[in-house]
Amino acid sequence: MKHSPAFLALVNDSKSRVKELTVEEVAEKINRGDKFFFIDTREDSEWEAGHASGAIHLGKGIIERDIENAIPDPNAEIILYCGGGFRSALAADSLQKMGYKNVISMDGGMRRWRELGLPEET
Image (tube, rainbow, N blue to C red; front, side, top):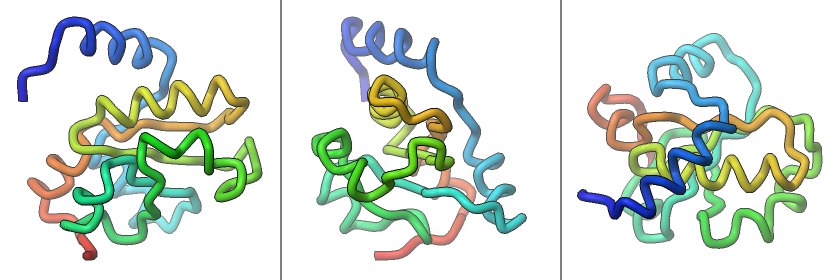
C-alpha cells in the first residue's frame, strides 16, 4: 500500500518517540515466557480474519477510550501491533501521552508475523 506523505510524516513523528521491536524480538519474548500485554490495534475485520496467538483486540479507533479499563497499570509492558507497524506506532504514541510508560510498537506487524509463519488464531 502506498501511503500519503502527510500520513508518513505523522507516523515518522510518532516513531521518533516510540520504542519499537521487530517481530523476531517479540517472538523471542513470547518464547522466553516474558509477561506483557499483546494488543492488536487493527480494524475488527482484520482481527476476525486472523491475529497473533495470545493477542487481545483494542482497535486503533477505540484504544485510547478503553485502555484504562483493559490495562489499568500505566507501568505494564504493552506491545502493540497492526498490519505493518504504522498504526501501532501512532497508538503507542497516544498511550504514552496518556501516561503509559512501557509501550512498544511491533515493527513489521502482522505481515511480518505471517511471513515468519508464527502462530495465529481466528
